[in-house]
Length: 391
Image (cartoon, rainbow, N blue to C red):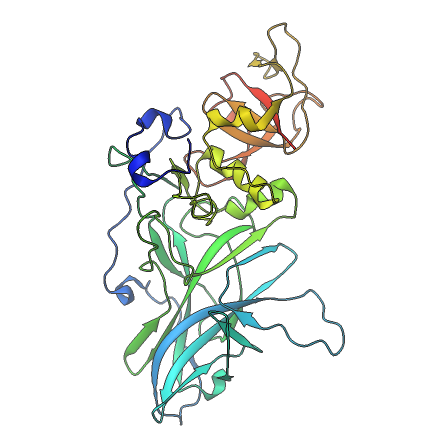
């Protein structure tokens, strides 16, 4: 679909033109938003662990999650790495550390507390005290993750940005700690990334029967999006700096039939909220610095070049052109285009040098993005075109 559209414009487009078409699929309706966010907290699976000074009297005002990219090694005398509230996009070899940032009022004075070496919030450097000086409280680390692997922006019968169903889940073994390592492994949807993908985080701080929670599922972006504000801290871990590597940042996010955005920069894919098949593969190109507009699968021929004639699958699983000649397996990262669906080639796993249905593609279709044999994609029986991004 053409994703760079206003809501009013998109709503007039026929549903058949809005996204990749699958042979079958089920769309799940997001649950209603929770007015009292503390009611959405999951039951605690571990006993509370207290942090701070029991002798200090005061109240907890607010909580935020901040993070720092930890260098693999620091030269002698190098300053420690500070933490901030900006979203992080890193390679798998760049660990990210999450830090609690808590504001409390003690003796009528408001003060920030964190164990991060330095703290920057909304672009401003904050003075802060260590968490050991915080009025004693319990801390719970939480994920803010999609509860569905597939959804539709056309569920209502016309286009609209449906709210993505985000839920809190508890980070096991992290309670009471002032900082934890960032993990992007989902728990409510299938884990196709095995250590890569995107996750959002929240922090709940409790003292004296009162619980304060950092922004979570309630922090909606509003009109023109079904996702969350950047105040919900986000970390994206990619496999490497290749085209396919950048695509892995989208792992763990739902397939969104008719994913869109009022602009390309505000697109649901650009914000790592989810995507349809075409927007998914365009995301990787944009991450590599090419300002390609989001589009639907039918718009891809204009931004790619054809590598081989259209092919059909034979009984042996090999794709052949109209003359019966096998299609060559092109290069990793090239595009395999089906009628109204698309993926990126990952590995030549069948007959060497030949495109067949055992070869591996990366795509998203009624599930969060994953690597999958063409034979299992739901489109193996259709015709294919092999294409490459234009330079």
